[in-house]
Image (cartoon, rainbow, N blue to C red; front, top):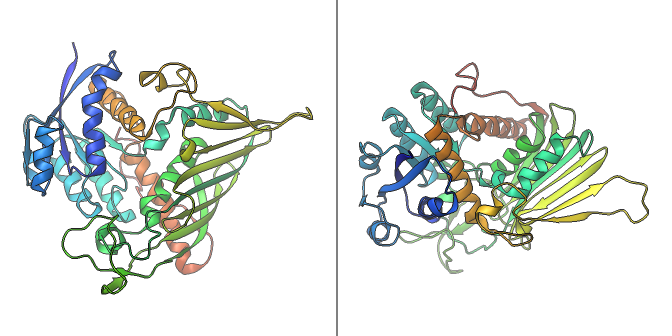
Length: 397
């Protein structure tokens, strides 16, 4: 008999909608599941979104105050998809209510906020998950298998990057995403977290780092009232200061001995959503780019004069891909990765099994971020120190 799991979603923006759609889709995608998801309540301050939650997404009800959703007795699991500054209080309240918690990254815009969320979940003993959704791409999972099997030999170097254009317009509005007290740090919280989580997933722990940052567009037009991150001002509009970084780069050494380079930007022109990695070993190499989600480049070291990279196309021979489309080279998309991670999280919750990435892995990511932040001021290499300390090592699934 399947376990009924009542779901609350806090915030019906882009990611709130994506996770809500996942709950609707999961029964038709994963018939062998151990649970039945039920969209119980959506919390959002916008009345139009609340109406959409019930009319279009099928929530049983919608509320303005998120506290009401978190404490509801018919809710078992809470999805935190609100703006960054609300993540920690929402998580702490959900943990206090004994709910399973899945939070979009960053759990906190600053490393100490992520640690606070981890400690709240650890103390409550609740099931946790984090939205590092790129880890669930079938070809990323295949890349991990290739690396773990030794097909690439000893890993010598890793290159990670996430180059995006979402902040490249100088007239893009000064929304909360660019404010330190509301978003936390800039690209290191927003998209470097994805690059680091991929590196840790594929290669392992990062031991020490050094890096730099830059605010490429230091001023932006002030918004009038509620504004979208994709809204645009006029040249004559009054401007305010951007408080966090547009660009960051990092050199690192992995605990296993490999070297690494990372770069992330929200203001580059050209790469539109280039979350990518390259892994180099003594026997071969791999390369993957989210802009070409369904392709993995594989190089085998050989004496063959016709050697070169081979393109591996996605297909139902790889994990989860067949839930969405059969055959080979039939593509899947971004929200399919979201549905996969939501299914895996709910399945682990229903069966009482461990889930990763959870809040423990989020602390691993921000431990690297904290070392990078310290290197900005010191200009020197900094060791990566586990910010969780002795608190509940591995206790939160």
